[in-house]
Amino acid sequence: MDGIIQSMFTFIVIVEIIIGWIGNGFIALVNCVHWFKRRKISALNQILTALAFSRIYLLLTVFTVIAVSMLYTHVLVTRRMVKLINFHLLFSNHFSMWLAACLGLFYFLKIAHFSNSIFVYLKMRVNQVVSGTLLMSLGLLLLNTLLINSYIDTKMDDYREHLLYDFTSNNTASFYRVILVINNCIFTSIPFTLSQSTFLLLIFSLWRHYKKMQQHAQRCRDVLADAHIKVLQTMITYVLLCAIFFLALSMQIWRSELLKNILYVRFCEIVAAVFPSGHSCVLICRDTNLRGTFLYVLWWLKQRFTSWVPNINCRSSCIF
Image (spheres, rainbow, N blue to C red):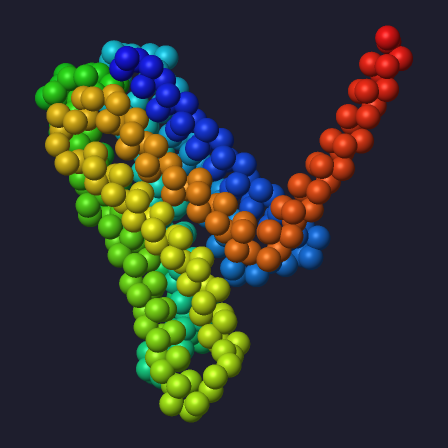
């Protein structure tokens, strides 16, 4: 019974990964084609394109780890292999989280309205703020890598340079739990907190704007209010998916004994994969250019399919 459930969980994770590849690949392809045609690309599309590539990389890394863990169970891995696996997971997850946080920061600085002098200064230099945030995240990435590598060096000496690839032993489960604690509780929580903060500030900005409209007896919504609502609709889904992703990562560090249960690990992977896969679908639906291109592609595929079916029917009738 456990084998059937495990296979079902693995199938769900792979389906989520495929959906994520298609969605993020579509975003990256459309933006790159527009960039090639127009010879320029907006700051927003730059963030979306980089975010799409980072998530493709993240999903590819997760798929590789799952495939290797299924094909090669109870395999001893060396210090170099442990560092390589953790680096790819760390690197891809880092940029996926920080680029998503920068997307929320970009929306916030572009749409929100505050009279504070610091906010006005940042709003006038939104591109520099986003670039500076990404540069700052590189320092955190370096620090995170150094901490995890130093921990791996220390523990691998105790394990005589070899470690089981899966979580069936107590040593392996506790070993990877500490890595998850360092990565999630310390470093992943920073972009997560930034995303939640910009979302709350955007809500506060909309509330102040509506309050000002009521004071001036304006019954109709203006352009600024519409922009607030459109961005909030996108960010609400993003914040919820990001919270689910962070919760799934936190669930894995609750107790090291739980990591020895492959069904529990697969369930956490299902929950975590919703964020990089589902958010790409939300971005396609909310972005006008991406949504229009996606509908055109669906229409083109429908036209091709309807013209292909009669040809098959004609050939069948000729045969009989």
